[in-house]
Length: 96
Image (cartoon, rainbow, N blue to C red):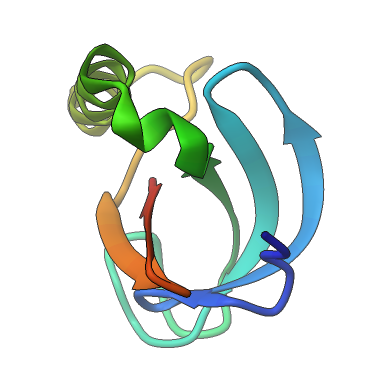
């Protein structure tokens, strides 16, 4: 599934920056004011690998990581501002 140019919630995804076991991180831009800043803010969005959505333990881990990221306040840890999910081409896509 090609994600560049896709809009997830208020975030418009750009180029993929990196990929790991749980998901891929994309350069993104906020298309509306939100918890990560005003409209136009540059940020990163992590997108959960869609094939892992069928694995309950992987989905639970992604959700737990997102919740922890929203509570964390440390200068050396990236803060999570939002978590969401939306259907893309009939496939649930989870992001933070």
